[in-house]
Each structure stands twice: as structure tokens, then as C-alpha cells.
Image 1: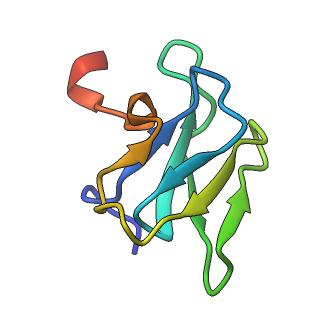
Image 2: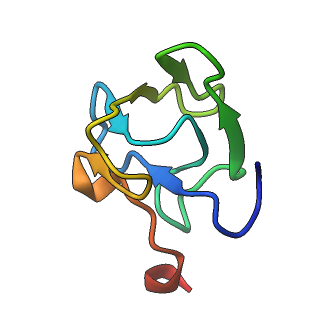
Length: 82
């Protein structure tokens, strides 16, 4: 469910794929000020999803925790950009 605890991810590095530990999240695109609208994405039963704004391929990885990603730089920390 979308809300303040929903993990957010970016792809500043231009990685071919970003592995994440959740199936429901927000894609930010790149870190501000180069971000796109923060879009809520839900993989449902699928193992992956492509962001319609930035074309980042997100893949679910059950070995990762909710706030983790590979590459680790893909985890968006709002407080660092506020």
C-alpha cells in the first residue's frame, strides 16, 4: 500500500536492472532535481516491472530486505535530498 513507509528507489547510476526486496514501491527516477514524478509501482505476482517514466527494470529479490537494493545506491533517502 502506498504511504510514507513505501520504499523509494532511484537509478542515477543507469544500471541495467535494480534488484529490490519489495514488490510495491515508488520509483523516483534520478535524485532531485533530476527526478521524474514519484510513481507507485506494484509488481503483483510478476518477478519484475519496468518504470514507465525512466524505463528502469526492477527485479524482486527475496534475499533483500524491504529497504535494500542492488546496487545499494538505488535506495532513495529523502532526508539526504531535502
